[in-house]
Length: 488
Image (cartoon, rainbow, N blue to C red):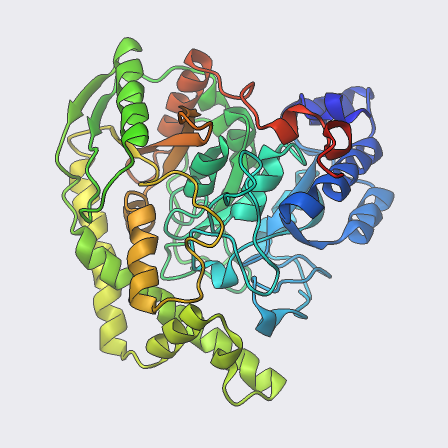
C-alpha cells in the first residue's frame, strides 16, 4: 500500500478496506512500520517498537472487530500490554516488561487493533512537555523546534505525522487534550470510569486519569469508545449507560445548546491573544449553528485550591511506585534516579500525611460539586484548550528549575483542562485553525458527567461545519519522510 494512500484514510476507513479485501491487515502493518522507520528518527514519538509482537498477532489471526487490521500505539504509561516494555518515560523503569494485558488493551485487541509499540511520554506523565531525559524529546510535526505537548505527546506526534490514524492516550490534567490542540487533532477525555483501568487498578491519581485516544476524525474517536467503554468485573462504580452509541451520536446534530464561554484563565495567568480569538470564532460558529453562547467570568470552582490539591495527589501516587521499584532493584534512594523536578515532587509526596491526601481528594469532590451545579444551568462550557501555543523544546523541561517554578509553568500552560479531571466530567479539544505562525490551535468543550454522547454530537456538527482533517503538517502531507526528503 502506498503511503500517500495510507494517510488519506481514518481508522474506520482503513478497517473498511481490510473488510472489503482491497488491502490486507499485513499491508497496513507494513505501511505503518515504514512510516515509523522513516519519521521516528525525526520525531522520536515511538520509544518502544514491538513489531515482532504485532506480526505474531497478525499471524495468529485477528478478531473481526470494528478496527480489524488497523495499526495502533499505546502510551508508555499506565496500560500493560503483554510482553511489551512499560518504562513510563523513566530510567528507573527502563526494563519493566508487562506480564499480561490490562482490561482496556484486551478490548483494543478484541476490536482488531494491531498494537505496534509504545509512544513517548514525559517521566511519569507529569508534564505538558514530552521531553523525558531517559528517551529524549518528541518533536512537533508542525514545527520541529517545538514539542507536541504532553503527556500524550508521542501519540499526538505519531498521529499528526500520519504514522497511524489514531492512538491511545491518557489524560490526568489535560494530557490528551493539550497535545491534541498543539498538533491539530481531535482529543477526547471520557467521563471518569467510562473506560476501565482493571484488572488490578480501579483509579489512577484519585480517579483523575482517564485513558482514551487522539484521532484525526470524530467518528474514529467515538467508535473506539463504543468498543472499549464499560465497567470491568469488580469495579466499584461505572458511568451511566448512554442512550445510543457514541458513533451514532457523532452523526447527528445536537439540539440547540446553551453554552457558557469563559476566556479568562482560572488561575489568573495570561492567555495567548490568537488562542482567544480562535475561541471567539468558535463561539460565533456555535451561534451560526443555532446554539446560544453566554460569556461568563468562571465556572464556579476554586482553581487555586484545585491546583494545590493536584500537586499533592500526583506526588503521593507516584511516590509508592518509586519506592517499590527501588526495593526490587535494591536501590536505597530511587528518587535520585529521577529527573530533578520529579525527584523533588516524589520526596514531597512521600512526606504528606493521610490528612493531607484526604483534604486534596475532598477538593476534587468540591470541584465536581461546583461543575455539577454549573451544568444545571448550561449544557456546554467553552474555553481555550491551552493558555499558550506549542512550547519550544526545553521551555517546560523538568530540569534546571525548582518544583515550585515548574508547577506554576505547568498550570499557566494548561489552566482550563484540569477541572474536568477533578470532576470526572467529559471534555474534548477540537482543532480550530492555525496561528499566524502556522501552529495549531484547539478549542475546548466540556459537559456534565456522563454526557459523552452530547459532546460527540457537537463535535460531529463542528467537524461537518468546519472540517479540519485536510489541514496537515508538511511531514504528513508528503506521505513519508523519504518522499519529502526529511529523512535525509
